[in-house]
Every structure is written in structure tokens, then in C-alpha cells.
Image (cartoon, rainbow, N blue to C red; front, side, top):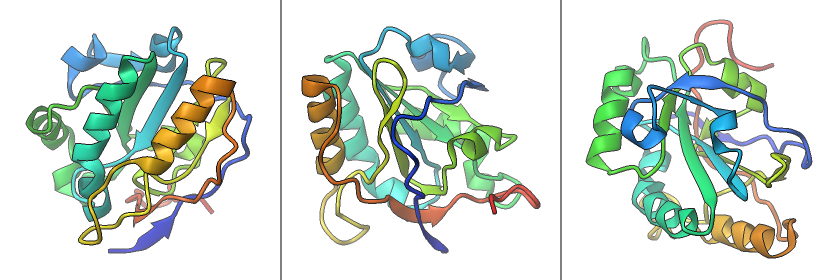
Length: 193
């Protein structure tokens, strides 16, 4: 397992557009999901994740709870898997659909097969969190919380603090600590420099 930290993106940058297939179309409202589908949300949380990574698995249940809480506050959530299923078959589309059903994801789980979306967002690890304001400007790019696999129960304290600040004031003033987890499993020649 290659441990990787997220790259702290410049705050205020616009969310790159995308259209990706949804492994759980009932949650996405369609077999395809686009950035524009979330235009009405006050904030948008995008998490790059996958099925196999122990860091991603560690936060899954807490992420579902956080999403359920904040969706009622007009915060939209979506998850994107960009891993290469040729080298990590557990991260293929069929396994994504099974995982979304097993964990009852209350948000779309999207497959970035070309890895173009991960590159556009400069995602580096799983999980990697990006939070956008109502204008889809980056307000937070940091960790879910301080816990790690086998080191405390995940709770999402860093993410929820950022969301509370964003909803209350329109910006995030708390420290943004990079996410840590498994590296995105890039196809040959696709890894960012």
C-alpha cells in the first residue's frame, strides 16, 4: 500500500466540469451524472475514493452518516472512483455498484474510467475531499478527520467543521490538513507529474 497525501489545491478555483457513469443510478437520478446536476446545492462535496483502500473503507460508514445529515441542509455529496480496474479488479464498475448497494450510499458513486476527472481535480489519494461553495469555487480541500484505520472511529470532524463554516459564513477559516490514504491507481502514463 503506497501511502500518499493529497495535494492542497488553490482555494477559490472553479470545479472542473465532468459527466461520468453512475454505479448506483437510483441515487444519481440517471445512468450519467454531471457537475451541472448539483447546481441547486448550497455546497458540493466531492470525494475521490475506491473499494479496496483501507483508508477509504475506514471512513465509509461515517461518510454515509455525514452525507445524510448535511444533505438535509442542501449540501450535495458524490463519490468518484478513478482507480485502474485492470490492476485493482475490486475497483471495477460492477464491484462499485455492489459496494454502493451494500453500504447504502445516499449519494452517486461515479466511475472515472479515463482518469481525466481525477487529473482535472488533481486528486492524489483515496479518500481525497474537495468542498465547493454555491458558486462551485473550492472552499475546502482537506481530510475527513484525524483518524486512521485501526486508530479510532471515523467521525468526519474536519469535514463537518468546514461545512458548518461554509454554510454559516460562505468561507472556511479552519486549518485544512491534507487527506492521507492510498495513492490513486493510475493507468500507465496517466499519473500526474
